[in-house]
Length: 226
Image 1 (tube, rainbow, N blue to C red):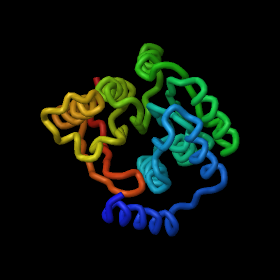
Image 2: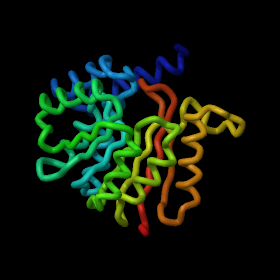
Image 3: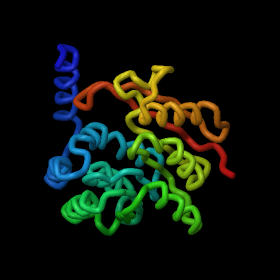
Image 4: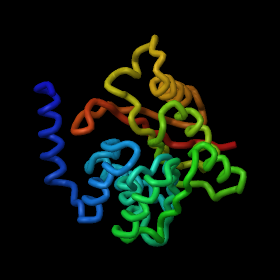
């Protein structure tokens, strides 16, 4: 770890200690990520709190999440929408989904969360075909090669004013490599290209550093649908 990276961790620790309040359910959910298909991939505590704040600022009552893992971010979002809201979360791996369900019960949000197990793009298309009510906030944090497909589905499941957040769009700076042939990079580049050229959305992206390394997120507001 470089000196810069050590400083990133220290600052994140400082901010989390002072601003983020995890109860035991969140602590256990974060720890249980070790039992999922992608240990260490969950958002950091301050990022979970950020998602919660965005959901509250947006007045979100219906949230769609691509990628559940242990359900750490799901819990933050479910608590933000409250008991009268709902979070639909999509996870491909059943053993991982089972870990998340344990965490939802422990956190007291099982009644707020609807978990759909299977390939996320298939699940999202089923929601579209069923005429599901549009969502107020969409969080995309699943397999990166499918990012443009997830964005397309998210737009079809949105209404004007829907907020879309896409995680891990910087990827250690690799997203800026025009010659990359790495599928996660190509998927992320395609997502950003769509966000930047589609008149139906207004978007930006920010780099982040911290205990999750050098990465970032894109955030968009849907202006029109159809």
